[in-house]
Length: 305
Image 1 (cartoon, rainbow, N blue to C red):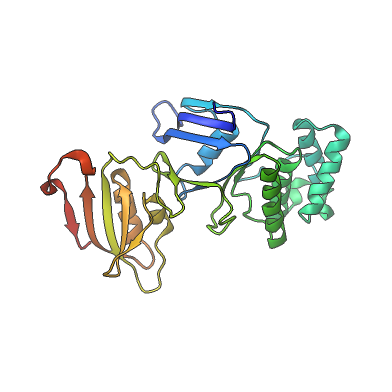
Image 2 (image 1 turned 45 degrees about the vertical axis):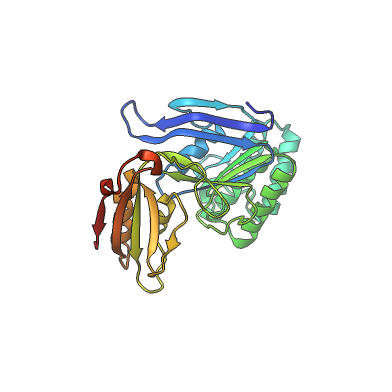
């Protein structure tokens, strides 16, 4: 493994059950020390599975995960029905992360104060609101200054001051040489700050360039080009946009052009046609790789869905 990589995924695949469908396959990812990495993708595309693999919470069905830095993980759903108070849970987790009892207590108090939850220190977890539970979930991951911090929708449920505090905590971790890998539904989250961005498309992980294109898209794989026109003022359905291997383009005729991997074209069409209000699909064209040697007659086009 390269010296400056905290963790590396090499040809990693994950599926549940021996004959289950692949959630992820052929994933290669290197997380550098000090890097801030954003992972994007539509709901249900495998982002949480990827984060659990990076964090070491889950094991790959194939491939290899190399490197095991001190890691802390904030899951998408926090198990709030644990038999602890907020302070007791954080102190316990501090000990799990290797802190002495006194240090764990001090750090627990510090992070409760930073997230505006000190008033709930003696409250049982089961009695906390969703927002307060989320503050505890985030605090436990920051107690012991992890070398790798993995955040799965960690900002969801936090109030505005706490979201800002988490932003600052992420900056502190990377400034200290720690790595942070995160998923968040808000595209503005840490916008312009992340060192790298990746998109989960199908079972693959594609590296996103600054202009939103996929640097890792397979040039040998067939793609489907979809042109669609939406109702006035309507946003492109996010699930359809997330499957695109290139940034959506606005044509001279006012349509939106999406290029998607062939296996995901039907799902993308369904997302467009079932949107509220629905989009009008103007044209669908399948394209082989440029170097495939197929004549233009080998390309298929469907008009006007």
